[in-house]
Amino acid sequence: MWKSLVLGAAALLTAASANAATATWSAGNGHSYEVVLFGNGSSLTWEQSRDAAAARSFGGQTGHLATFTTKDEWAFVTGALNSAKHDLFLGATDTEAEGIWKWVVGPEAGTLLSDGYTAWNRGEPNDHGRGGEDYLAGWSYGRNTGWNDMPGRHTAIKGYLVEYGSVAPVPLPAALPLALAAIGALAGLRRLRRG
Ligand SMILES: [Ca+2]
Ligand SMILES: [Ca+2]
Image (cartoon, rainbow, N blue to C red):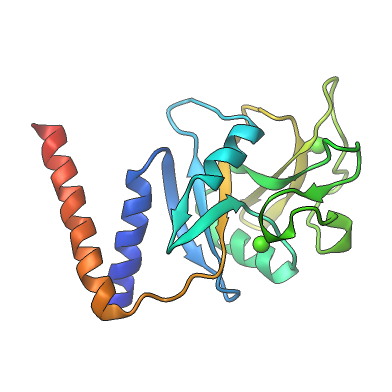
């Protein structure tokens, strides 16, 4: 019960910051993942999403656009993503050399996608269209999940996926007052808006 209260407060805190965050999940690898939607019909480029992800933090960890190294990691996130149902920017590009896909953020920065697990959808990457497609996006709609190379901005992409490194569990006696303070702060925000 305490655990869910603390996690709930953390999710609320994230949701109260810029953009619309839908959830934060923790995987067996100790990493946490968060969907941030652009919201209100706005859209960010891949570069803006990369910078926005790097400006976020959770559990004392700085965020980065999500990078994937194992099938388990992608499976975990797509399981959690089923409620999100959006195309989201991920942390890879082939802007340096067409067709050479690299993770460019987080601990895997500089690593070739071809050296690890990939979840390309059938026929992707295809560098589709006149301007080409140099940025990685991923999605999960039920059992239909995969990766696609996309332009740096596209109406189908509704947000970005943030990954946070290993999060040290916060001891409960310290976490509980924090959670209550967070709830109190949010209540204060609501009162201000009404006033
Ligand atoms: Ca990762
Ligand atoms: Ca494509």
